[in-house]
Length: 222
Image (cartoon, one colour):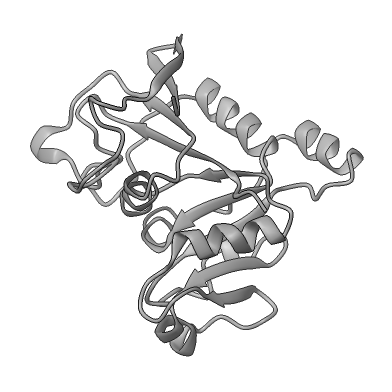
């Protein structure tokens, strides 16, 4: 069984930040790019985020466009893709939007995290992948068994770093805002570690275009 095709998606500043340190969420994109992301969501089988993104952004991870939702249903699929949360600790808020809108969520965690996870079976299915961490390959195998062929990973930086460093990413979609954050920067697109996408094995630029003042860059595995 092949693992899902993995797409990493993010909006970031020119210097690689996903957010600043202010209490309010920094908007890095525009409505046209939000609609593009919604189209990407509508075309995948699952959307995944890390626990940090649940806490910071409290997203619902649903397809927003009624037309796209209707097209998915007409093809025999759910209105929105399967939603997944990666949390080694299992420390998640049961009141978060993702657990209270749409179908149940799959939470990939550790054996330790599964013991303490406060979610009930009505809102989430908890899957322990290893003793102390989330084993990404086990999680991807589980998704493949559920019929997931295309997975969209929406962040944040910790989960981006994990997937990229494990060489489990087939495509990267970056919406780059026309400013730098510098010392105001908060969460990053990726964090320091070893990456196989090196100068010796770079990704291939598949698309580059302007969406208003936003630059969309799409890279694929060579």
